[in-house]
Amino acid sequence: NAGVTQTPKFQVLKTGQSMTLQCAQDMNHEYMSWYRQDPGMGLRLIHYSVGAGITDQGEVPNGYNVSRSTTEDFPLRLLSAAPSQTSVYFCASSYEAVGTGELFFGEGSRLTVL
Amino acid sequence: GDSVTQMEGPVTLSEEAFLTINCTYTATGYPSLFWYVQYPGEGLQLLLKATKADDKGSNKGFEATYRKETTSFHLEKGSVQVSDSAVYFCALSDWGGTSYGKLTFGQGTILTVHP
Image (cartoon, rainbow over all chains, first blue to last red; front, side, top):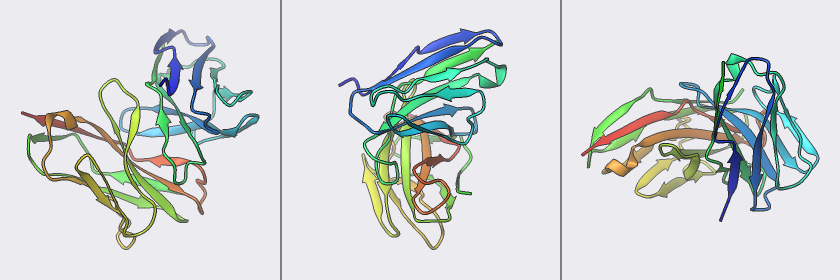
């Protein structure tokens, strides 16, 4: 059971570079989301999607882009990396809108922006 | 907007001690409440949940009761083990409020259990 798979696990970027964090799930979940985890701040929602072709902004969307062309994949793009985007990023999915369901998380991607 | 406040950490306990991690929330609608656990080097996983007032969630010896009158969802375990060392997150999802379809997390509480 693969569950939610994130790549890469670690990445170092220079300020201004762009990159894509990949997320794939094999559970046929409609709901997918991206969070960032920073010390003392818990997890904050960046973007989410309730199905293929549908995305919406979360709490901290600036500097990030997403698209959802298939049910399985939900990539997160950093357009022009900044040191403030140094964080651990988690992708999560759920079989239903998250109100009563369980979120399944990937193992995280640790990003450092120099 | 919705928010979750957890007790400050880190929390350090000896094995077999009693654990309480406090969690209070504010919400404008009808929240469901969750505790997630993150073991070192891993993603978060659901520990327990409660979807309405007075519900008790339980799993792996952990319990939490949804108290609407005190807007709380405190996590408890009667006897902790070294393997319980992790970061614990309280979270809510508010169907009727502004955070529809989204989980709002607390800041996390680091628990370390010594033999």
